[in-house]
Length: 92
Image (cartoon, rainbow, N blue to C red; front, side, top):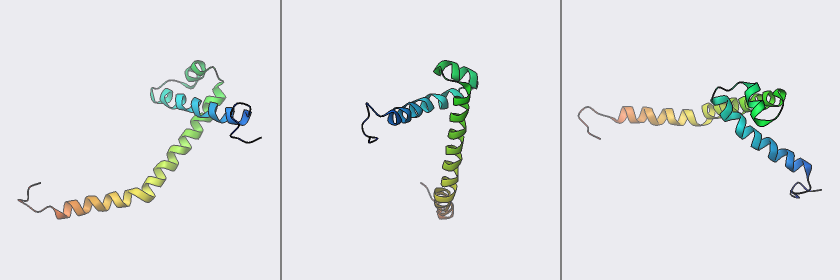
């Protein structure tokens, strides 16, 4: 059974359900809802919400780490060049 067989593949449905649920967990957390409140709204157990939040936190850590390693040095250099390039009396 291929994962592309969307209508009959329970794995595909679980993946879709997981992605949709996490799309609702993140805003719930950012609006300072408790885990039991989020679980109640989504009609799932607190353990599921807790697991989703743990996964989302790990993704956020990875994103920050990737930014610091890849983008920040470039952005920092751009800022330094811009600051050093400005001369007194020079208008934008």
